[in-house]
Image (cartoon, rainbow, N blue to C red; front, side, top):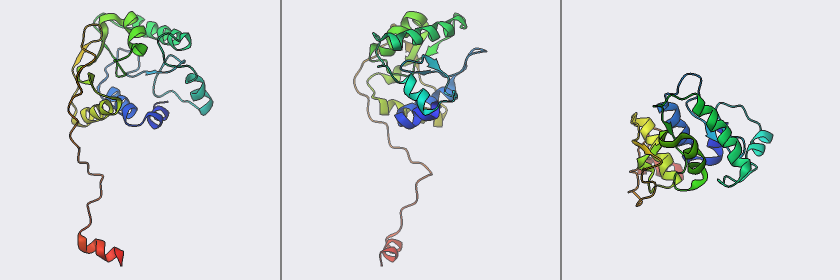
Length: 181
């Protein structure tokens, strides 16, 4: 499922999945990452999924007032909560600016539900890029309580462009001229 969601959502989901894989330290018996689905509750990214199943778990709007979304999400969040010790934090890497994730999860996890404070003011793509950069640099973000942390804020400066080793070196003018003849 993680691969399917990464394909559909692009940079943002790839960042979330890579970040959760790199930095999660779950209690025994729980996966390090869970995907919030539209009406399938919480599912591990390793869950095999076919087209029909993907359509089924995506068939409801992701809205805190939608029972087809909220009931499975709350059911699975309660099961996760039952396996947690009192000091275990749940890191939400999804949107914290709207009630769609915040409302149902905060009611179950309370002060243990945290999010990266660096998310405030960032859009999806910026958050995805930030998480991929953190994975590459081996640096974990700073978490604050979802109940008390500032979820909205001014738009931060753009992330600086990263130079990767995957790009081909630019051709010199003379070699470009040779190919144009």
